[in-house]
Image (cartoon, rainbow, N blue to C red; front, top):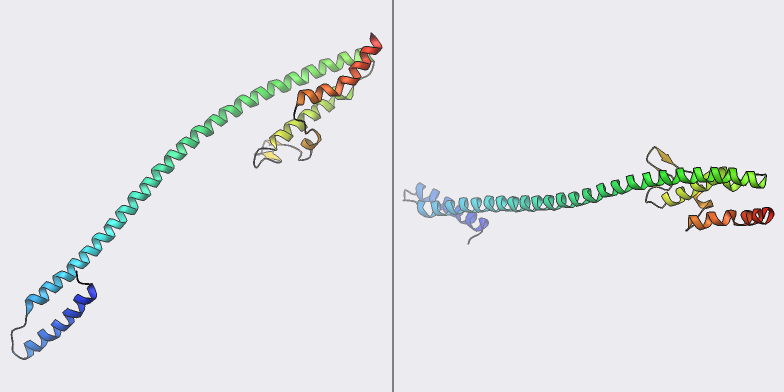
Length: 188
């Protein structure tokens, strides 16, 4: 197949030859010129078709990529909604646990005060502070949540460092272990 440049060069030569033939009163060769002009138009058509096919292929690839992205988004959305459900359950469970901690701490503090004749600070405001610090310490581990989650939940950045316990129950039991033993020894 001839290139566009080859055809154009041949046509330039044939146009000059045809013009000279006309001037000399001779019969010019229109057939070869017509054939080459048709070949040139065919090259234009082929180029247009190639561009159309390239665009169609790119459009199909874009649509396929978009379908893959939609599937990925759907899967992520499913996982995101499950995480929201988990967060709701965990938050409600945490709220109930906090209510139990505060109620039992309050009751335990009253009983301790009655028996010992004095309050133990670990059963008062300190308990709330430790609880807050432990929750803060755990929440700060979530990516992007070192000091806050959104606008509603915020914590002191250093509070969590005060209670960096792996086992909250064990850490709490150690706080009253000695005072309770002393109280038992005194009363019994």
